Amino acid sequence: LIFLVVIFVICIFIFSPTGMVGQKEQIDLTLDELITLYSNKYGVSSYQIRRTIECESHFNNIQSNVVKNGVREESYGVAQIHLPSHPHITKEQALDISFAIEFMAQELKNGRDWKWYGYNKYTDECKSGY
Image 1 (cartoon, rainbow, N blue to C red):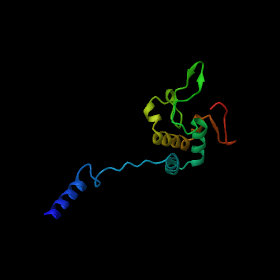
Image 2: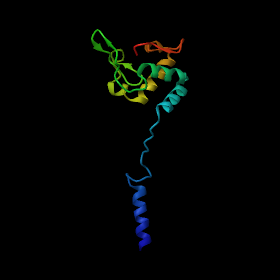
Image 3: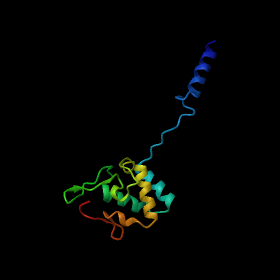
Image 4: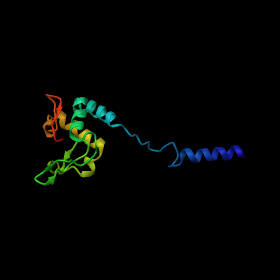
């Protein structure tokens, strides 16, 4: 009888929605893993993505600290996505690290690296003030 109870409890655990089997695993990738994933997916330089993020946000998932004419720039996230230039992107998406890195990789693939002026890929330097 004890054996049957143990088997019953194991079956409930395994096949329940909160049990181990069938439960969707949360996979959290590091920033570097996301950079590698999306640079490979889009065939762009992981180094350029990493340096651009370093120069733009110093790897911080924040709103830009740049103030122009007394107004804080509406750029958000590690990729500093400028929301007025991309009205289809929400603030929440810009602050989603995976979304932001994939967006940057897509833009780099399409030759739009000029959108990020904090990093100069020719001199490999960050521009001051960013």
